[in-house]
Amino acid sequence: MKARHKRAFGYISEPAALGGMELFPSRASLMTSPPIWSQAMPLHSDDLTPEEARRDHWDMLGFLALNATLGAALGFAVAFGIVWFDLGGVGTSLSRSSHPVLPTVMMAVPLALTFAAAVTASAVMTMPYRKKKQR
Image (cartoon, rainbow, N blue to C red; front, side):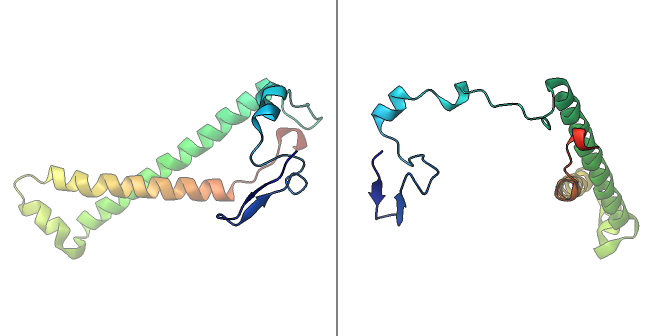
């Protein structure tokens, strides 16, 4: 394998430093080696079966959907609180408006989306990752 030097970007692709892989493989090595997706990954004793993985993914999607729904509900509750308690005169302005629905929706939907994204992101960051086999 031939090392290629890229001084303009400040890195050198040494096969030994990359675990035996070249950063920029030659055309000949690409044509002779099998594609990486054709190589089967070995199953370890702690890997999930396809059914267990599918069930785990659906459980995780349900968990994320629940958190997104709770975050959106929290955002709508905050928007309702802003209007109800007349913070910044928003409730008064909406009550005197000839078309109060559109400004209310334009305030409530972005708040709900922001809160949904924040709650979902915090749920992902605090989610304990354990494999099903270890339970």
